[in-house]
Length: 240
Image 1 (spheres, one colour):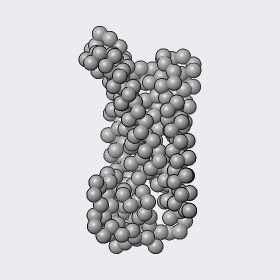
Image 2: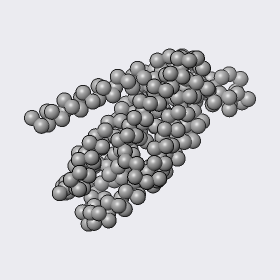
Image 3: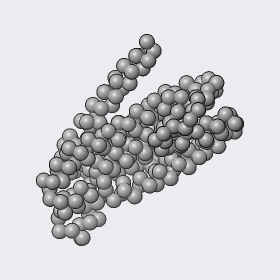
Image 4: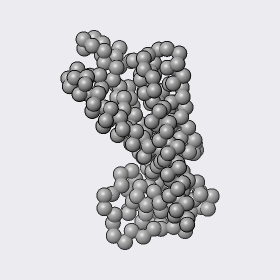
C-alpha cells in the first residue's frame, strides 16, 4: 500500500512538473515586447523556486545557487529579450545567429534543423530538465526527514548518487543549454559544474566528520554525481 502511494505521488508530481515545462517556454516568439519580458520573469521565477529546496548555510553554498539564477536570467533574456549572442556574432555571419541552432541552420538548412529540433532536441531537453527537477524534489524529501532524525540517507535516490540535488541543478541547466545554447550559457555551465562539485566535496567532508566509517563505506559504494551502470555486489543499504 505504501509503495502504491509513492507511485501515485510520483506520477502526480511528474505531471505537475511536465505541464509548465511543456508550456512554460517557447510559448511566444519575437524580441523586446512587453509580454516577452513577462514571459522571461515567469520562467526565471518558476525555475528559481527549486533553489528553496537547498539550505543556505554558508557563502560557498549560496554562490552556486546565485550563479544558477544568473544562468536562468541570461538564457531567458537571450531567448525572449535581448539577443546578445546575435550581437556578438553579427560581424562574423551574414545572417542573424540568435543561438547555436541558428548557426547550424546555415549549415544544415532551416527545414532539416527544424525537424531535428522539434522532434528530437526539444523533447530531449524537457526530459533532461524534468529528471533534474525530480531529483531536487525527491532528494530534498529524503534529506529533510533525515536531518530531523540525525541519520545518514543511503536509500532511494541516495542509493545511486550522493548528491542528487546538485546533479538536478546541473541537469536543469544542461537541458536549457540543449534547448537554447548561447555563448553566455555555454560559458556558465562549466562554472556551475565546478561550483557544485566543490560544494559536494565540502558536504562529504562534513558527513565524514559526523558519521565516520559509516559514511566512508557509503562513499566507497556510491558515486557523487554519475550513477554506476552496474551496482557493486553486496550493496546493502546503510541507515540508522
